[in-house]
Each structure stands twice: as C-alpha cells, then as structure tokens.
View 1 (tube, rainbow, N blue to C red):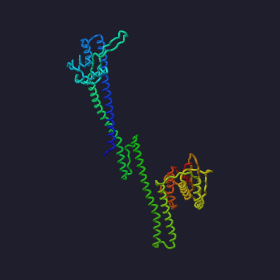
View 2: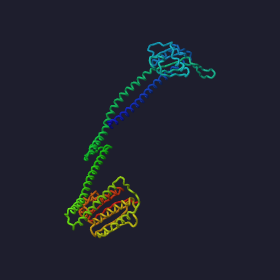
View 3: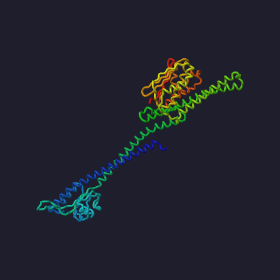
View 4: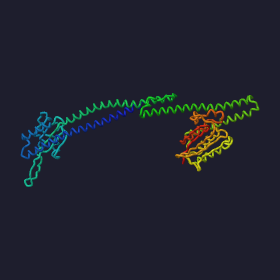
Length: 484
C-alpha cells in the first residue's frame, strides 16, 4: 500500500538529499576555485618579481645563461615550491629548475609551440598543463616574455624592445585536486551522518503525524459498523491540528449519535402516533361489521372513525410538510414584507376559535409597518402555528397577547396566552419532534406534536431565533426577524 508515511518519508529524504547535494557541490566548487585562485595569485606574484628582475638584468647587459641569474631562479623555485623554465623565443629551454622535474634535465628540449606562440602573441600565458609531459604532473603554468628596457637619450622615455626570452613558472595542480578530493570525502561522511539523523527525526515526526490518522481511520470504520460509542481520546489533548481534528471527529461522532437517536425516536413516535388512531379505526369498524356495536351507536362510532381519519391525514400532511422544509431542494426566499400585517391576517383567520373560547385579545403593535426580510408564506405558517397553539392551550375567557418590538436591526414578535404553566423540564424539549406535554396529550388529541418543531425548522432556515417562557400560568413565545 502506498501509505502516507512512505510518501512523506520519500519526499523528505529526497528534499534533504537534494539540498545537501546542491550545498556540497557549491561548497566544493567554491573551495576549489578559492584554493586554485590562491595558487595562481602566488605564482603570478612570483613571476612578476622574476620578470622584473630578468628584464632589469637583460637591460643592464646580462645574458639568460649567466650563472647569477640561474642561481636566482633556483632560489626562487626552491622558496616558492614551484618549477621555473627559462626559454629562448623559439621555445628552446635554456634553464629549468624546480620539484616537478624530479631530477630530470630538460635543458635543450622544446616547450609546446602553441605555448610559445600564445605567449609571444598575447604577451602573457596562463593554463593548466603538463607541457607535453615535460612536468611530472599537471601544473598551473603562467608565462611572461623577457624584454629589454631602452631609454631614449633625447626624451628620457623608457621603451621596450621585442622579447629576448620566455619565462614560465609552474605550480603543482595536484594539491588543489587533493584538496577537492578531501573536501568531497569530508562532505560525504558529514552528509551520511546528517542524512541518518534526519531520517530518524523525519521518521519520528511523520509517525507522530500518521499514527493519529490511522487511529481515526479505525474509529471511523468502527463507527460505520454501528459502534456509535466510538471516540478518539488519545489525541484530544494535543494543541495542534491533530488535536483539533480529534476534537472535530468526536464532535461529529456525537452529532451522528444524536441524529441516530433522534431517528430512532422519530420512527418510534411515528409508529405510536399512527398506531393509536389506526387501532381505534379498526376497532370501531370491526365492531360495526360484526354487530358488536348496536345500530343506534353506529353513527357515533362513524364520527369517531372520521375524527381519527382526519387526525391521520393531519399527521401525514405535517410529516410531508416537515420533509419539504428539511429538503435540500427548498430555497429560502428573501423579500420585504410587513410582519405586522402578516400577524394580524393570521389573527383574523383564527377569529372563530378565539370567539369560541371567549378570549380577550391584547395587542401592543407599532403605529407603522414593520418591514422585515424573509418568506411571507413561511412566516405566516410560523405565526399560524404559534397563534393556533396559543388559542388551543388558553383557558376559556383567558387573555391572548400579541406584541411586536424592534431593536438592534431585529423585529421581536411575541405571542402569549393564559393557561397551564409548562413545567421547566418540558421547556427544553418543547421544540422536539412529536413532543407534547403530558397534561395536554389527552385534552387535545388533534395535536401531533410537529407544529413547534416546524416553527423552529423554518426560523433556523433564516438563521432566526425563537424562545419560550412560561410562569404563573402565562406562556409566551418570541421569535425574531431581520429588519429591512
């Protein structure tokens, strides 16, 4: 398997090796050039001194074969650890001294013609060569012509004549090559040690990164197999991205576990809500068919069957409506509308129910329109569900309140009623699916426990809030809408 550990280790090792190769190559080249430059600078300085001495000696009438001049060249060659060749202009060696001759006498031999021609044409010469094996090894060779200085008796100016000889000085190049070899060997040893240490450090670092991922992968597989209690606890305390990932994984696992629990509860609640009316319908229908229910009671039984059928229809309609609200295909419309007008229109639609319970309606509304953003149809449904619940659970002759206030760019719409106080432990679950307070379950069988859940779902779509308070027999729901 092409694991992440192997890929990351390969990439890191390749990067480290490439960096060390480039660094080593650059350092070796720089060191070699520096060492080579030092040698060339030394022999250039020596040949300058020798040529000045030779030019002055020749100008004073000395010859290239004079013993004093040859002795001078031998001394310089010994001190500077170089080899010096004194040649005629045709390339014939007149005198040779230095270590690279190894005791051989090359006097009378010819230097390469290309070297003599280059020096005579360019008035200087520089190369790395063995002069066709005249030297025992490759050498850095520098050459200059020997000229005679002539003074003009009239003007006193000094001029030079054509060359009377050629002077070459050579330094062993093997020292620079040996220096480069030693440098490369040292670099290779150092690189091997650094690469080994880097390999260990990278292995530990990458292992520390990949191990948590393997643990989370195994946890995800367990979770997929239905082990919803699986959590990643080993890395949650780490203060880095791995720790954040572990926390996020656990949060996801908690969310999925809660969703699974809610799904199970939803199926159980639906089964319960469907079972009760269907059992009632089947019981009364069988009673009519087998004669258990007398003819004078059949109409009453049929009314029960009709009532339970309508209840089933409402349940199915609410469930379809809830499915549509939660569907990804639903697009939240955004337009301007008057929230006060919507609320009053819903109030008018419930006039018959309000009159039937003889409720006293109190309103506290702004004098002008309250323009908000949202979907008027969705907000109408929110207001209808809340007002219908308020009327349903109000005490006969009680008070129904409607209030709209605005602050901080939000419109706060409150709907309250006088009735039974909702217990505090019920308030936290009042917006759950199929939740109905025990005190109201038998008194209001037409309810299916989805109205407030639909309200919460609609408001969540628009990122709005809803709260509920219930105290001393007065219950109030307050939801928000964004002002224009």
